[in-house]
Length: 233
Length: 233
DNA sequence: ACTACGGTTGAATCCTGAA
DNA sequence: GTTCAGGATTCAACCGTAG
Image (tube, rainbow over all chains, first blue to last red):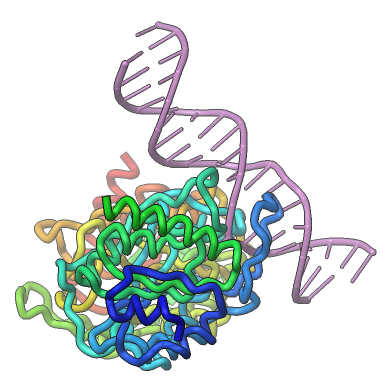
């Protein structure tokens, strides 16, 4: 295991971001030390926007990517939680995978993005929400009050976007706050642009991120370094 | 088939409400004459509030009640739609049943009730939404613009409630308006207090409702008679 | 009143994979 | 080939509000 990772595990360091494949990297982590796994995996869309070519195809997006859930279950502490982003049309696959990984699905949480996306204009409702599965390992109780099953938060505006599926920090911060205590350890196996890490550092949670793409990993490190700096000052 | 039903089918009458078992009654209806089936079936909760004993246990609520979906598919016209209310924890069952009935599930729609219910306070997000599956029979295009996948509408206040799972007319009216044209025929196999019928009459759609419980059927008839009266004046 | 602005809503768009 | 449906979006127009 890398030195920085064990330093975060022991609490001597606040965060780290690993550039690598999450299936490989998760396997190196010890059992039962993480309090929250928060993941936004590829949904299996393999969608390349025809409108804009700003971002390339996402990696591992040929089909719903859920193999990391088994190791997520293993590294979670008893009483730890999983938050897994997905979309209405693939949510069943992820729910099944979470259950089969040995976690207890407790709630379907809705992220209301306030502004809608495209989709089939003629015959589908304009897609304005994503689904977040909330699951626990064993018994769990919210440490800081009970959140609602609908979270309204506008999506990141296209101008500010540095990753095609970037989640707003404003959405993640209250989520992390409600499901963990200060100083606990959060892990994101598909860190992307690092929004989860930024949210964690802002409210004093330790964080381990894993990201496959070297460019996104660099971006994430940069954003988190800033957040750590601002939190310290 | 009852005389009033055939009158609604032919357009000589605007609405009717049948007091009976929907599985039996649906079987009597002809193929392909209904444009929208809108149902709020028992979710399979078998829940009797310990807090308030205002309402008795719902009938047929031992497990998710979805057998009506097969006949719903049959009575729908080509290009017709289904809207099926359900809850986060049983939505999979209904989605599967809709698919197996031969309909094409197009969207997961979220009703954001704005105020949350109870549920397990310690370990689940406060449930603030219901799921509505939107499915079509064959090809379909919205006749009056494209609705959003998140519908915000406060639930009926406990004081005004005449049925334990009563839906607000304010929620149903725009839904019916978006998926049907004026004068088309809407059917609700589990009509409850008749909110769907009221919404239909207010915006000039024909309506057939089926309700098992004689008291609720009476209530529904009363509400719809009023709505028909106000629409006519 | 008239303009500037920001928050919302409707809808164009065009490549790709599947039939 | 050729058609057709569909899509992890983007953009312009519109409206209510504030200055």
